[in-house]
Image (cartoon, rainbow, N blue to C red; front, side, top):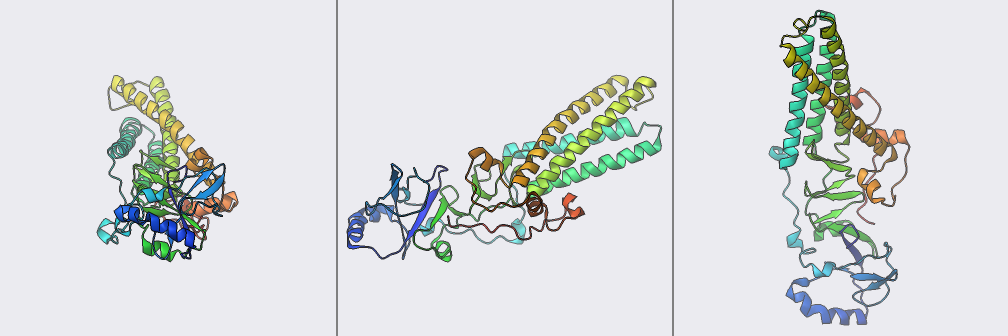
Length: 362
């Protein structure tokens, strides 16, 4: 088990020495009690590290296996980890269940609150500020901009929430799948003990989604989903459009306050002056709060994309093992090849082009 709690499977050939065979024969009664190890014609080497020297738990010799030091392998002690019947692949998905949705109470509530706040801003902007305005051109221009941005923000939120972020197939740690990898002696694959999946490089397990997610950045309750390789574009667009409508709403609130102070308060709104003031103050507070929050998130996401390093990888300070690309190439991997107006559309599924192929073998 590595520092992240993942099982490490080291493939060794089935050509064992006499001493190794005797050791296995002694362990056979224990295996018959439900602790059988590995798959035939391969078996799993169990080893511990002591003073940065890898010692094999089966043959009590140093194993020449390339892996970080200070790791303990005790897969054999968990009988269900490697049993094929405990890691059967899920049934193929049909057209009726292709939509991705996380059944998390907190995330669902946060998602509903997000939509309600946008609808509240829509109500105040249209019915409190734009409809009572005397300048028709001003109302039409700002109404078109605000409604367009709000629509794009909600569409981006829906796509970020209902798009598979890049979940690793659950239960793929089976004999057939491991054999299909065509592992060579000494090669290593990692298995997540929580979702029974062989994990590719740069994948992390989400305790809320209960799945391993490729290039997982973080789990966001506001979109009730993880932000991963498949929906990062939609999350970035969501934060950008929310920041834009928040800024636009703050500008219109300032203009409307100035207009009401200059003119009669009874003529600048269809509501009473106290109600108008309360509605505008609440919108101003909402706009300022979400402008700061989403602008920071947008900048963080863009920086993460340009550096090709997820939030989890930055937090854990993981060693970089993937090829370094230019910032522009990293942007195209997330938003699609080639650059076009579709980058700004939540309805356009990005074409990742020559994206990195994830390796299961470490």
